[in-house]
Image 1 (cartoon, one colour):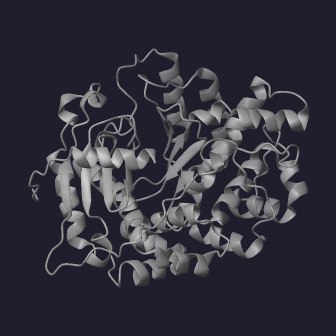
Image 2 (spheres, helix red, strand yellow):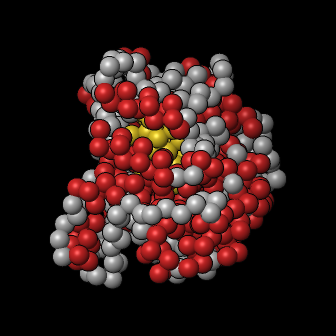
Length: 449
């Protein structure tokens, strides 16, 4: 209801200007700010990690900085991991957000190998604390929280490894029985929705959890699943054994306490009206800007209107998309506010915020890379608009890939497949040809990129 009210308010304030078409990706896409002194001990430690492992360690000093304890934990993890595994990671970035997610991995385009650690990786949720106490009769110590952080970091680095080694992942699917191993996250962002990776499946999450436990609590993993232990040792770690990091797994059955954050709430119900008519000739939705008044007070003046390159990116994307898909997005509005995510949508409307172009985390993107990233964000929301008008596609997806999948998880699954189909088509085709063919046939009507 709140989202609907917002949409109605926004639509009342829309103006309708006529928008017309108007270096490669840096390894350090989240570059370290240069305002720190070379003698700053944190910068010295970050630089030593980069020199030793060729992995950038970055943060936003104006919001969240790495502490010495957490940087030492990062260094300990990288020291323990074999070079072949860690070489798939290019950067470990501390997200400038206090939202309690543990980590994110976005492998689209040239953003591969960039691990984003969230606030929740260092400061566990209340629900996790309750589960820990139910298992061990006390709260975790500081050392145990650091051990948990190490476990989460190794788990997230696994997605970089999977993306660089798809054949290993395929072999994993032939070796283990998915569903017999706990992959529960106790924070407001379920891992299922934190990993944005072309063709991502729950089996990827399964492997990531197994790698994390192999490193952090190997005896536990061996007890739970010898098959997983042997696969990680032989195919991921190259035979290297890791003694463990003192991580104490919690017992999911110890208490009935659940994590409300893993319940995404109500899913938008597809509309009763049919999809919009597909016009002859080119198609471009209504594109406009929204005046949010005092909500944009903290936004710099140059970010209060959509930049020309953002407008051009919209036109470029719609030029190549099939109208069967693109006409389901009837309007796109730019909202200059920092109090929402990069984009959201409802019914036939997509709302992109200034975060979709000027996100604080992205400090040194060139224009081409920023445009690619924006197109992926926009395409993600456009996929939801398509599913809003074509609920039969969601049902066919479930029937094809997972009959027990919730509508919410099906939406996320399809969104990521659509963005992967556009932005990483060769990789999606290699890793998950079934999803590639589904998007090609049912959504893009044969159009390939």
